[in-house]
Amino acid sequence: MYRKTYVFLLMTVLAVMALGAVSLVGALDDAPEAPITNDEGGPVSITGSVSYTNSFFTAGVAEPVIILEDQAGFIDRNKGFLMPVESQVLGQITSDFFTSPFTYSLTLPIEPRGTLRDVDHDDVEETGVMVFAVAYWTNIFGDPYLEERDLFGGGWSTAYASTHVKQNPTGGGEYIGGKVLIYAPEEGQGFPSGFGEDGLLFTEDDPIVIVPQGYTLVDMDTDPFTFDRSRHPVVDLIEGEGAEADDFSDLSYTEAFDALVDLMSKEYAFTEFKGIDWDALREEFRPMFEEAEANNSNDDYKRALMRFTWAIPDGHVGTSAFV
Image 1: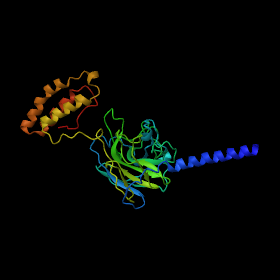
Image 2 (image 1 turned 180 degrees about the vertical axis):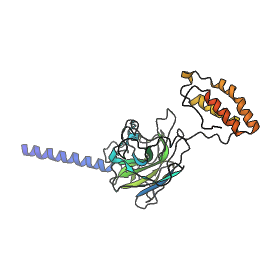
Image 3 (image 1 turned 120 degrees about the vertical axis):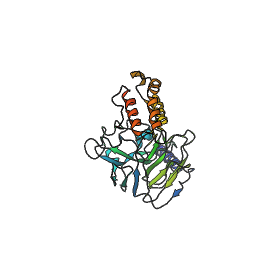
Image 4 (image 1 turned 90 degrees about the horizontal axis):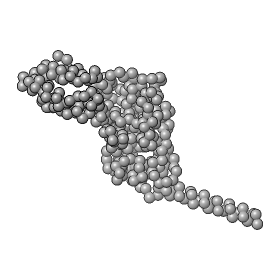
C-alpha cells in the first residue's frame, strides 16, 4: 500500500513538473521574433559624439568618463539605484573634451556584468536581459569607477546619455526615445518592441518580441522599435531639453530680452522667496535693450544685460558678456 502511494505521489510530482516545464517553455510562444536590421552578430564596439551647448558643462569637471550605464534603476523606477561597479564599462574620449562635440569609443566585453531584469511581463520567472545606456559622467571621487558620491544618490541619467527622457518635473525621468543596448545571456528572452498604450516602457501593456542571444542595440525613436545587430553602431548622446542652453541668438535684442524674462519668470526657483517682480524689471530695463537695438550696438546690449542681471538679488545670476 505504501509503495503504491509513493509511486502515485511520484507520478503526480513528475506530472506537475512537466506541466511547469511546458508553461515555462510556452510562456512566450505567441511572441514574434524581433525583426533584426544589420544582422552582423551583434555590437562589439560603439562610437559616437557628445554635443553640449551649456557653458557650465565643462566647469568643475574632475575626470570626464563615458560608461555603459546599468538601467535596472529605470526598469524598477528606483531613483536610489546605484549601478554596480562591476557593471560599469569605461569608454575612451577620443577628441578634445573642451570642444563640442567631442567623440568617444567604447569596447564591449564578451559578457557584461549588468543587472538582469525579466521585462516581458508574462508572469513566468525567466533569466531576462541586461539593459544599458551609454552615458557621460564626471568621476570626482576615488578610483576610475563611479561610486555613490559620484552618482548623486543613484537612479539613471536624464541628460548626456543615449536615452531621451522627459525633462519636466512631472515627467519622472521616463524614456521617450533614444537608444539602449541590451544583452540577453541566452535565447528566448522577451523585450518590448514599443511603449504600449500607456506610453511608458517596461509596463504590462508593452508589446513583446523575442530577442537573440548577445548584444542588440534598440532604437526607441521608431515605432515599432528597431533592433540593430551591426558590429560597430554609432550612438550619439542626447543633451536633453533640461540641460541644453536656451538659444535666443536668432532674435533681436529686445525679443531676446523679452524671451529671457518670460523664461526666468517661469523657471527661476526663488521668485517668491526673493520677492522678484519680473514685470517691473521688464518695464525698467526694456528701454535699454530697445536703445541697443536701435543703435545696433552690441556693447549697449551687453551693458543692458549686465545691469539687468545685477538687479536680480542672487549672486548666482550673472552674465559673462562683459564690455
